[in-house]
Image (tube, rainbow over all chains, first blue to last red; front, top):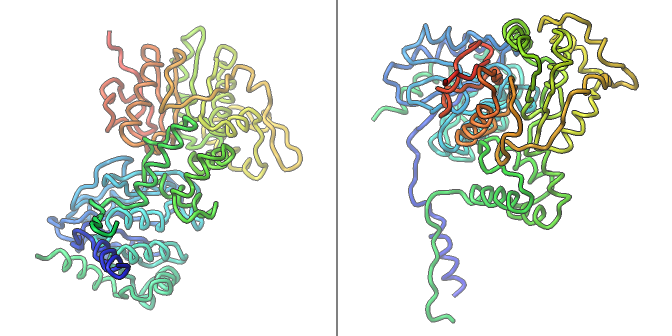
Length: 207
Length: 286
């Protein structure tokens, strides 16, 4: 009887559907970030089907021109995220300086001026953790160059939810602390060059 | 008993913790009438996880159990559920736009009512009080400073801030086009700056919920900054329609630098007055 129950409870824990097709990409980057992103974002084609959400640490000057800068150089539409806007495929959203960027369960973006996390606002961890909660195994999390440990816990959450974790090779990064911290917490994450990361992002959406 | 054991299978893909959070927010509403059910979930969930871990609860259900059976727990939960991060003259260019663009309109009124909605610990209120004094509007203005968090309101009423924040406040005030010295408005002692009580002379501090309460006065200016970002779209709509109902003809609404009326059902009831600083004006519908 008890064995029988045990068996049933195991069967019950099987997910009803397994959604592992990639649905979204999140990127966290700090020092040296503009150059690193320049090797990835312009390499994505105009018909790229996934939304890409990015936290880059910048001085809390709200007139950030990063989104405009990349919008001019990318086939995709690149914008600064607006509160409660729908997340559209093939769009790239940057967290505004001095605001956290979060993913809502109804797949909208939201902003928050809550306390900095690890001295960072926007925080990579906050974006990654909320995105992992919503997209689960359908999420690709990427940590690039940076001089602080923000993003390591977030990447761990991505992996725990079954998502894919990519980290820029620390030896190739402008600042190695951020990718190193991510790899230390997530040893199973794939460590790649920027070119390989761009290639991987194109590959995962091939039919 | 052992003849027919029905195998119960969970249905759907909703996570257990998300069900628990919904139930917890419902419990808080029914027991204490604090309504967080329309708050943006991602941020609420993050903060509830912090609370759950802080109070050493294994689940949100366990946290709910504590909250339902101990009103003291609800008081302890409020700082987790309400965000209290502000500074004097936060986003100085917003206050500069108020000073240069909105104040000339306000000067045409013999008396004014201003609503600081979601005033938290009062930084926004003191910014307006000082600005209005500098612009000669203070004596004809009644301020309503409202929030759902009673403790935050008490701090707002006390007007005491840590001295180490004053450097930032002073710089913000200068960048906002301040016409006096910020130090004229506070006295410093024991590591704290205490703002002058004359700034609170025309202020009504009050518990008010944008989620459950109604409009209480006709106002010429509503400032509600970095409050709506914590709401979902439906609750944003409710709050904005409250502001609309409160505002007099051609009244002004100021939002946070990343907040917009664009997704609101009331978007057409306002016009952009100062787009980059997110200051809107109620349309004249007559």
